[in-house]
Each structure stands twice: as C-alpha cells, then as structure tokens.
Length: 243
Image (cartoon, rainbow, N blue to C red):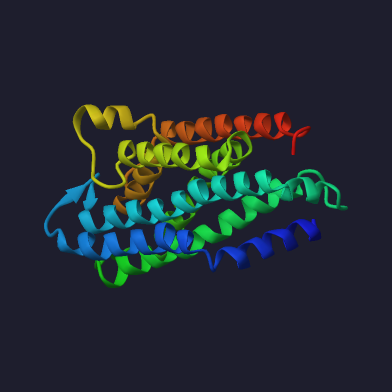
C-alpha cells in the first residue's frame, strides 16, 4: 500500500506541471464560469439560480475532464512506451499501477472543484449552509470516480493516437447530454435522466434547493460506474500478457 501511494504521489507531482491538465481541468471551467455564470441575472435552472447551477456544472466539467481524458491518454502512452511492463518487473503488486492512477486522478480533481465552488461563492453570489457546500463537493468529486474507471479502460484498450479522440468524444457527449454547458429541457432532459453527468448536476441542485433526491439518480450513477469498472477490469486483464 505504501508503494502504491508513493506511485500516486509521484503521478500527482508530475501532472501538476502538465499543460493539458491545467488548461482543460482548471482554466477552462474557471474561465467559463467567470464569464458566463455571474452574468446571467434572474434566470433559474433545475430549481436554483443560474449562478448556482452553472457553478455545479463547471466544477463537474473540470473534474470529469481530469478523470477521463487526461487519465486515458497518460495510461495509453505509458503502456505504449513499456513503462507498465517495467513496473511489473518490480516488487509492486500487480494492481498498484491502476490503483495509483485512480488515486492520482481523484486527487487532481479536487483543485478544479474547489476553485469553481469558491468562484460561485464570491463572484456568483451563491449562498448556502456549510454542509451543503461539503455535500455538493462530495457529489461532484465522487461522481468523477465513474469517469476515472472509464479512463483506465480506454487507456488499456487503445493506442495514444486513437484513445485521445475517443475520450474526447465520450467527454463531449456526456457533457452536452449531461447539461453541463447549458440547462436541458423537454426531450433532451428526458434522455439526460439516463446520463451520470446529468444526475450529478441534479443531485447538486436538489441539495441547494432543498428538494428530495430521487433514488433513481444514485441508481443511474452506480450503474454507469459498475459498467465502466467492469470494462476497466476486462481491459486490464486482456492486456496483461502484452504490456
């Protein structure tokens, strides 16, 4: 366990200097929220003020981007370069690499979520009790774990030149259909009920507005996580003899 955490810590230190992570996981959601969120006055989405909704949406964008696109690309490149094979020759347990990547990805989602939430509080004028702030953070952070599992699956399954467009397409589809860039209504909202990104956003807005959270929201998120985790396990095992 100590070696696994050391591997995760080294990954975090390395990724802090990664420009791709800084742009898509930190700069993009921060800039979008600062430009759009506080400027929309008098509008509501999902039962809360627009600034509160967009705060949750942009925090989710940063978290999901770091968990999916960055993780998949790094794993694929390291698999191609033979780094994973080299680690298997060391005393590290067989699953240490995957666990280390997941821990590092989850740690790196924290700054993007916290920064956007702070912007919501001090620029967007979002006010709520302390426990709601912690709950919203926890929902977004744990929700990103779903896409961390998918990032592992894609990274082990595809080569670097293929995994990047695949991860980006999945990320964009999940973001748009999840209502992260604009609130959904009508038919699109009915479709979005089956998308984990939408359910994370709705849980957050329901927490803020004081509405009861339907059990289906948790079922949808857990179902996608179970599917992505199973895909990750299959991908890792399938590549065990080739990396």
